[in-house]
View 1 (tube, rainbow, N blue to C red):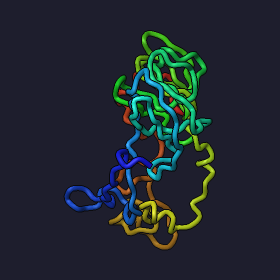
View 2 (cartoon, helix red, strand yellow; view 1 turned 30 degrees about the vertical axis):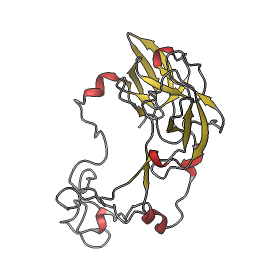
View 3 (cartoon, helix red, strand yellow; view 1 turned 90 degrees about the vertical axis):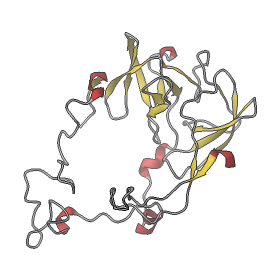
Amino acid sequence: MNNKLLTIKKKHSGRGSSGQVVVRHQGGQHKRYIRLIDFKRDKRDISGKVIAVEYDPNRTCDIALIQYVDGAKRYILAPEGMKVNDTITAGEGSDIKIGNAMPLAQMPLGTIVHNVELTPGRGGQMARGAGTGAIVTAREAGFAHLKLPSGEMRRVSEKGYATVGQVGNIEWKNEEVGKAGRNRNRGIRPTVRGTAQNPRSHPHGGGEGRSGIGLKSPKTYAGRKAVGKTRRPNKYSNKYILQGRKK
């Protein structure tokens, strides 16, 4: 653990600037430190050595501590198969090797990538969770076509950087929480069914005994539709989606 790459995580317990609850079911979290992750991979054309693979309580995957030849240290997401003493680089001349980062324009078709930039230079935003990876399927007109874990096919600028490999800790999805106390330590408070509440607290509330929701379709606590097509029909990124995700 490198102290220069840590910062305390401030607790908000789901409350906004007015002190009122704006996100329900949050509070009581154990003290945590934020690990500053290098999503941009902007240490270009300089090799780094993996000196540790560590647990990060703020994400589902493990993180790797990299020491570069100039002495700088950075945390990156640890891909599947990365081990201590491995060497990685980032830049246009990098090899197609697990942990190396380069523009999508240089990735051979069929390569599995993660930490994909949507806007070149902004840092990776896609495929960052445990076990996730996008497949480069095609390239045309300055865009790479990626198949995402959800089944969605999406166009991404081929100037954007991505890291070779699949995010590690694949078995995370099979993990069982085990008891309510563990979720309380994670800052997750109990979630009460809408039908068990009163009508003032939830659209599903009210009624005698175990009655249904009494609506044509389920609603969120704020009255928005909870099932069906809930994506905005005029969302800016629609033009980049070639095929929607699997339902």
